[in-house]
Length: 193
Ligand code: IMP
Image 1: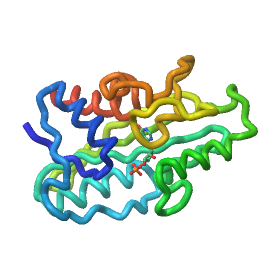
Image 2 (image 1 turned 180 degrees about the vertical axis):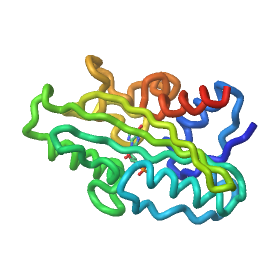
Image 3 (image 1 turned 60 degrees about the vertical axis):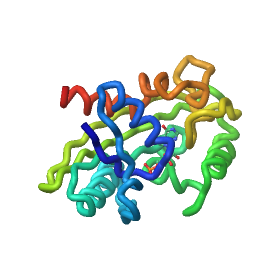
């Protein structure tokens, strides 16, 4: 079985492919269909954006598609950057720009006040317009320094409660075991298997 993934984010594609492969499903990136037009992510919630992304690709391919919208919610920042995690430091911000801004905004906060959570909503949408949603959450803390070179986004600054290792120091399979995305995918797979 093959499933189209409505994402151009290499980090997400790697994690989704790895999880789906464990049950023999091949993840097909939307880019393999040529120049599909991605959805504009202007929703106010992860749910809204995940559905928008999946539906945009369903409409252009006529096939069921899976999309992920995710974000980092930092307690000390009242839940920011949240749904705006990809463009926290500006429209064309790089991962490095976003991470530097996060470190600056949390500069005055000691380790015990750096709690955060990653949240993920996955939308599986079908050509008849119906969608199913699957969610996952990972709680942790924001580190004071970068750690590790793997993963993507805020991974080098995010450590899971009690551990000194960041998500960027874990293999894809290890991260999928505990992550917001891995948990949402697990729910999706339980639904079908
Ligand atoms: P979006 O879902 O395309 O809006 O992007 C979500 C943004 O949140 C990404 O660009 C990353 O900056 C961040 N993000 C989401 N999931 C993860 C993760 O697993 N690790 C690190 N950063 C993440």
